[in-house]
Image 1 (tube, helix red, strand yellow):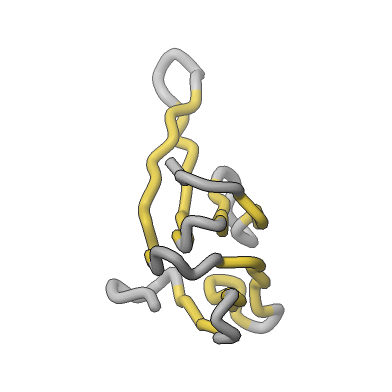
Image 2: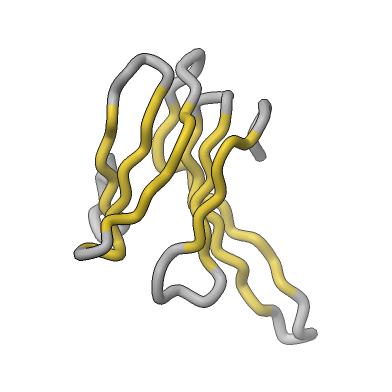
Length: 89
């Protein structure tokens, strides 16, 4: 679903089929691969944050809080996201 280059993909710790992506389009996305009855995988994608025109460069999960991660951005900011919260960023 990204509209520009993907710079970083990280597996969500302790989650079998989930990963987070960061891209030049400024989006940070969570993808869950859901196993279907026919054993195929179907992606469910959620945009966690969107900052058009501001590239998201890197993702790093916190070692002491595996459901939280930091993202770095071209504008020089570092943002914290917690996957447990309804308003994530």
